[in-house]
Length: 131
Image (cartoon, rainbow, N blue to C red; front, side, top):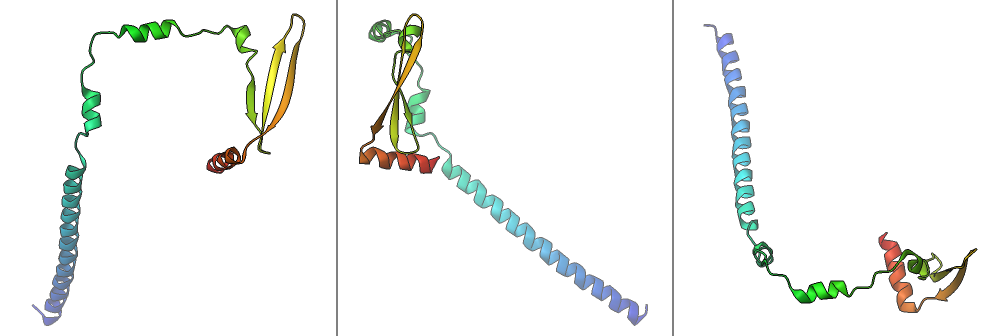
């Protein structure tokens, strides 16, 4: 073997050693990262009191008061719903109330402008900014 060939082999061995160190460092960091993820996920998982409450089985009995309340609810017909006022919020902070009335031969619509109090104007501005 020539000294030239021996030097080439030593350089290749040194490069492989450097690659081995890089891969070993990468492997250790990966194992450390996985261990941290596993430990943190175990600490986060659990069943809260609210989830336990929601998981309880339902009772098969019906509350008669709830059924009576449902039976007493008012059901509006379509013609009654047409007479309800509709409120529309305009960008100029005024509320438009539209009252629609029906007669046998025509339908009329009346608009009224209402100025909002300062508290409602602030709330309206916050809603507009949120959208």
